[in-house]
Amino acid sequence: MAIGSQFYKDVSKIERKVWGISIRQLKAYVLLAGTALILGVEIFFLPDWAFLIFSLPTAIVLGYYPVFLLLNTWKEKKRKFELYFYYEERTYRSGQIRRYGKHEFTQKETIKETDEI
Image (tube, rainbow, N blue to C red; front, side, top):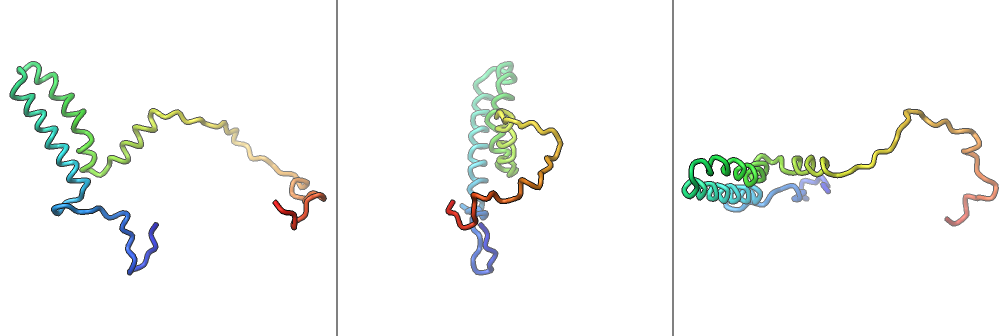
């Protein structure tokens, strides 16, 4: 909730900084370093054919989250991914507008404005 005063700043949209970078960026860099470490282990300990098979899926599976965090698009991608798997019930719309009659707007005689609800 933003009040819009020069004295009261809305701090809900301001990211906290650690060592000059935001926590979101720090988390992304740590995850990218972990991904690079795993890929480095694959480089040195797997034969060439196995490295070619396993490196791309490893990079994609472990690298998409920190890259989207750095690009600041993670929430949009997550929402799109979740909506792809959710079942949303759709209501049928005929495209017609209902016409109301005059009798629908008249107050019934048994109901008074002073009645308790």
